[in-house]
Image 1 (cartoon, rainbow, N blue to C red):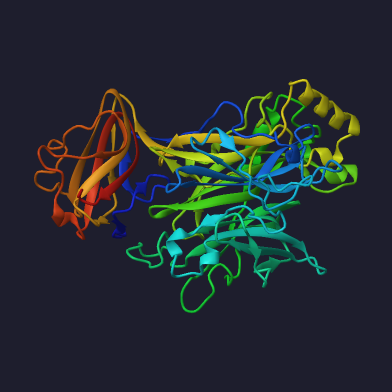
Image 2: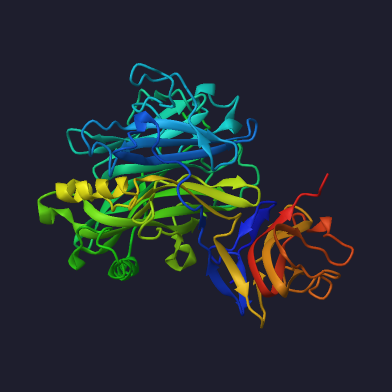
Length: 534
């Protein structure tokens, strides 16, 4: 059977799912974890954040505003463990800014009064942004100006037990309004988490590959599905168009089940929970209750693939044993990918890409409610909420345990939830690596949109990477064989490929070609047919 051609245009192409690879030898897929900034970049300090009894939490949203040169961060000030846990502790939606992405300030917004003053950074929590906030600046002139910023939120259950999710809009990210037609989706098994995603960066489809969804937006609600003896959290998916007189981000398709844990997930959860060293992380723990669930997912498009950062919920204890509800659990983040939003690949052999911290750290129990990655130079930055207590722990903890935690915080032995930062090279979650013996791969037929090529690679000292351009039949194009290629060395996310004095050939544009990568002591992350400079 002939291999399907991949219409790659000039979009970046990632090696996250094997789709682009026709043959390979001597390569190993490597998962790379994000490097975390030491300690929080933002923690409860302002009076309205109740730093003596409370921490910061999700939903965490972040953007980088190039025009203003500002990192902008949305977060919640909440109780010690979960919202409403401690009497008198408010749940407030707040906003902070930073020039360097690490040192944040709380601007005086003048929007909400606290202790008789509006000199604070508080938004209105009733209509502030939920998780998965989108800045749709590219839709100016197509969508109403007051819909530039979009967000989703949980609306609770109705009298019939159906869970509802709604949307909110803002012209500037600070002043929000609730859509009067909420809920926009609802279902009997819907849960309290939902995120949103942009499927295209522009209004028109342009040269998107065949099979890629043509809608503009997607939602990923938490849905519950009975798997084995447990009713588990899973990930749903629905989409919204911005054409054909349909109201964007308001009219949605019927949600489908997109991701659900399987037996291997359960086995891996049991392995992880068996090695959890500290009873401080899991106050309650019962082996019979161990299983995996998916709490939520932040999904974003890069090139021709959707990447999903999946919140892995390692359930350790069923709280019905104490007469309550919910589960005690630990949370970290794994990577998924999809080319059609329906079929999802568990990238990186299901290894975490953001790991929980050391036992004494602020993020030792949960990496939760993280932002979309921001491109900062040659890196991707993700802001997240880190917790030193497990999911739902305080709801069923003895008051003595809670008081001991507060005492430990005051003594500096433990930390309240706070906002952390994790970084990785751009496109850097998965690489195809060759050791000293070398390795190679050839791609399926590609239809590029230009005649120049760049690679995202990290070549160790003494190593090299070469690229051969082939006809669709597999024959090297004259002058563009491996022997003709100038060896690529060093580390760079967009290293141009040259064959002697040639940087490519315009005739590749629209023609079916294959690429052969041959490398030694090198990591290969991605490639891209690039537009000519100037």
